[in-house]
Length: 153
Image (cartoon, rainbow, N blue to C red; front, side, top):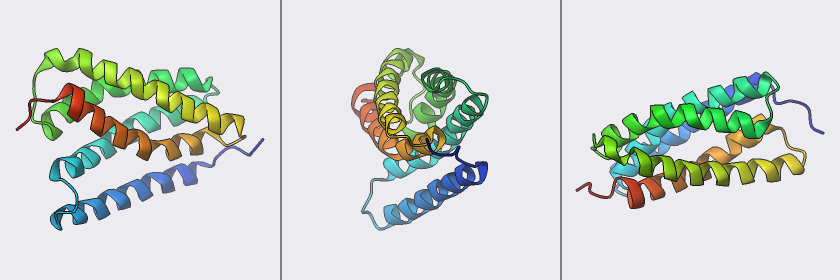
């Protein structure tokens, strides 16, 4: 089994996420990437720091990873609904919360599968959680745009 991921590595992963978001923001000015996707990534960065920090704390408290992921997802959904809806998609429609929760159930299951695979391969769960952030974030954007916040102009 691999040694536990040190805290400095988790901080470096978050710094890398910020750098990638800045790089993507620069690309949006070149019109290579849609503006709402860039805003989604920047808002998502705040949401991810919130959720990932909870996940890291729970894992370091020796919580079983599916439970840690579940609790961090639940806390993140409440926080993310308002920021993603209002800032990214321009929606203040609270009735969309059920669709948003459905998307996050799908994202949770996919993320859990990714973590399970990494865990079976012997990877550290904190590092594995960081690796799963970007593919899950892209899928989150696509699912929210397609199934939750579909009425944005």
